[in-house]
Amino acid sequence: MARVLIMHGWTNRRQENTWHRILTAALRKQGHQVLYPQFPNTDAPHHDDWQELLLAELALLEEAGEGEKIVIGHSLGCVNFIRAAVDGKISNPVDRLLLVAPADPNLLDEVPGFKVDLAKSATKAALAAAVKSLTIVGSDADPWSPDGVQETFGKHLGVEAIIIEGAQHFRADEGWGQWQGLLDWVNDPAADITVR
Image (cartoon, rainbow, N blue to C red; front, side, top):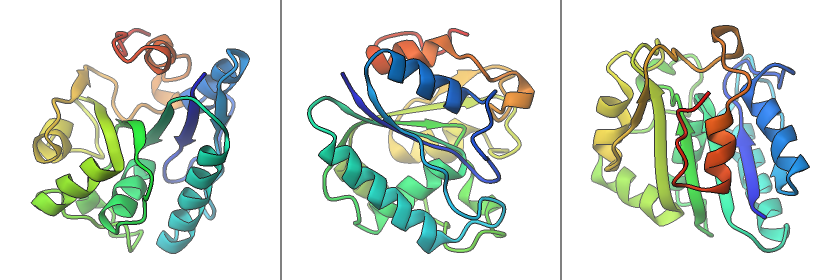
């Protein structure tokens, strides 16, 4: 069984109909150890608070026993992880990191501290040191990644992003509740994550 950390994004309150919460319940029923914390002050995130909770949850993941360590982030949750990696705060690499609809750091002026220069080779190197396998999933029409997820993230981090047409920002009100492909992917990284 895997050890999984799921990180929501800006303004998320872990509503019942979000894919994060549905995935958490489904993985727990399968016997996986899943952490799905509520990050503080979600309407006006504070960088230090979000970093502190991320590191605490990663430490809990380490203590959770054996099994693959998988971290799944959405939107600002993705950038929070990248920021921690760039700052050298992730001492034990995770086995798999999935970035779902990561928010372009250039659009995060309202939440200071989350800026990260994705084009720097040091950013790619820092993330490679913190993660054994990186997967990026995005949309062809995400307002939080106006230049495209491949152009903004994949190109700089050395990964070919998986693009799901029409997925927008993967929010519940955009139809992203049950996501079978993601559940399958946690159990098998070769699974087709695009399956709804």
